[in-house]
Image (cartoon, rainbow, N blue to C red; front, side, top):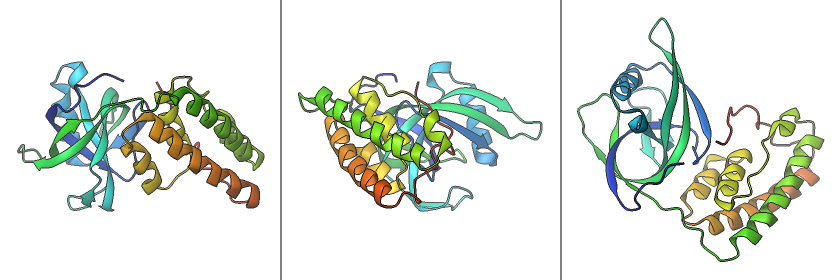
Length: 231
């Protein structure tokens, strides 16, 4: 993840999705709408380190269509474009990875068919002095969660990547790897410090582990359906 000046403002393209992108997560996308084909063309004209767009989760509406997304969450993540595989008919498969978080201040009319917004970059503060201790507790509890998923027959659980020892990266990896509804994942993204995110994950993991023990036939086994991985 690159560092951005906290509080600095910029105008960036937005790509509303029905999912939450967290920093460090690899996000593949299939681009087919004309407005996003135009976005890719515009990004291709920029320097490589400036080829990015903001992924924001849809609060109300749908991904597809000009009027699909009626309301967006305020906090999103910059997706840096890493590769583009074009199709003969103009569509494309792209690979991006989550970079810095931002807050949407207002929508901006840049004369493009895709939405743009003025945003401000958010910081990545550690928070409490005992962040590393909390991170270790989260790691242990996540291992219990992963074992429960594997024990319930989710083959994909064995494919989950090893956890990072860095508390901030750990907090985002756990946020991405757990099977949560959009509201819970968005809340984790919005938390201002690593320690707050880790503590929230402790509570979520405790809830999920209890559920897995009591309802072993209902595991959250969508882990492999989200093509993701940390950098």
